[in-house]
Length: 332
Ligand code: PBG
Image 1 (cartoon, rainbow, N blue to C red):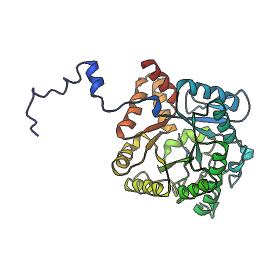
Image 2 (image 1 turned 135 degrees about the vertical axis):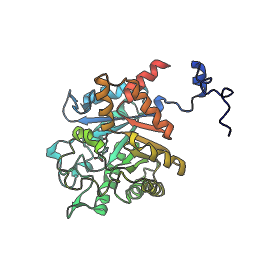
Image 3 (image 1 turned 120 degrees about the horizontal axis):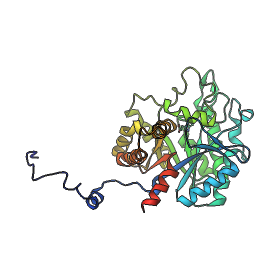
């Protein structure tokens, strides 16, 4: 290509008028790209602020109901439910995860009673339920993979039975997608989807989330480094995704989001599966604190979400979902 052709080629010509910028845009963001993670808690009439995540709340189920009506009004296609389990219900094995009437199961039923068309996504991992805060059960000081699988598949089944549409294993145990898929098939849940957190990194960006669900507790030593991925690695992410696809994942998540766009791009270019980014709690907190201080304009939210689309995402799990959805409504 000859690069010496100015002024025949002026890149600014296409940018000059607004209609033209609209015509040449390569990517777009719509409400249909949004998944809204919501925190639930016990009690009634509670809307507890989460200090590390300004403008976000933990909802008791009656208040959650109202929030879901808002989701319905805004047309957000799906929500992801995260419970803050009371300490008295936590133990070393995360037993409460298998209670068919636990907080998550109740929340699933509420969503379905308000609008069966709203997609419900639930994490499969034991961290909200274990007293030590790990995603699985401990044997000799480490999270034991194979023993944890036995519990996770039942956790997935309990959620599917309660009406969950999409099971989202976020535990990073080896073989979990296959084991869960088999269990769902065996029990007749042939259309329950699996959206696996395939490339989930051991990240400090999850800090505010762990405060929100009260799971930061006693994580010691290596933290989650023996099961979540090392942020130095990239090829390994591709292998994780390949494995999950082969085990029966329908869609995959990359997490965290914005600092990991290279991983999203790489998966998009090498494999064929719907990709979702999780713009995690720490990313939310960073943006919100700057926005609240008027250091950044609110438009930065829209920009980050568009960047996920540009990198190759089909959609984004984001705490900004309601905010962005109402902005997108105003633009219509
Ligand atoms: C549980 C889970 C975590 C997040 C989603 N599911 C935390 C963790 O793995 O420690 C983080 C989400 C966020 O930071 O917004 N396994």
